[in-house]
Length: 262
Length: 193
Image (cartoon, rainbow over all chains, first blue to last red; front, side, top):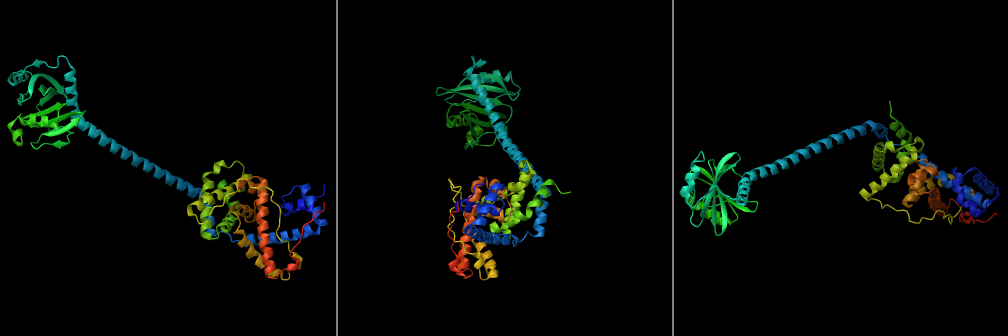
């Protein structure tokens, strides 16, 4: 066994005292300390400091019995915590679902509300793309009224606004209800006028009301106006300013012009 | 019937608590530290492969929990290990008093214990952890190395530095109090090879 120098022994003294040295190394340190008074003194000094540490460890108080019992019962307690957290997560998820359903419902209802108006707009757009767009071409309101009267279960009054030229009429169905479709031209642009037996008040999606009670809205980039007159509901759709639609409505019936209730 | 986890905690509870108490310095913080450690250990209990490594595993959780709690409370700065920590800085310049010359054994021991505790709290965090894990947790060098996630050589050098700092303080105390005469307080090392 190789003998150790002091420089080699000093770093090993603590591991030697802690019984952390392997057999051969431990024996080598032991042999050196027995022969070297300097390292023996160092070992005694280290032992004194180590004893102080051990006294400190022995004098360190234990946990209170109550705390110890609580920690040892942690298995069940933590399970309860996990269960509580699971319940909280389920509740949070349920609340989230309810919130999402609420938001979804609002969005759906808003869309559903807008859908009514949108169907008129879609019909307007589809009609203009059709060739021919009209079943009955006429510039005379009376002729159009007669044509519609023979084909509809109600008698629509065809508006005769100044500055708006009637192009003709056709029949259509919106939400399974027969509707008179009238096409007008104003300053080079076409305006669709839908006349139904039902009040337009059930329609949603308008954002303003003109002074004469004409409701105004915008859908798919088209302006929309709606009002009730002559026991019918009127809806105008056109790629024209709202003012043009209001002007049209104002001339369609006396009560609209005066802003009176129908 | 106690579960395997309860048995594991029961076996290590006192060393864990005593270490936590000395690390934190008060019962309230120690209980917080132990409780959080036990909770984390319980949640991660499936990660423990061998029961033999349970003590090092628990103390590793204690260490990471303590770091997290310190970050939260920021009461005591977390001292990080040097990136290139020297593994063998064993040059021990601490004075080596001749303990056999002590005039008052009782005064020596009583004073030493207070000085040791004070010196321990002045150590760098990783040296302090190594020393406390050994002293109060009863961990072996190997277990400390696993708990601190560092090589065995690093554990040895940390323990050496920590104990050298304690001895320096103890020597100063002993000489200052006149328990050990100054004439006996220095021993020069020499080679026997």
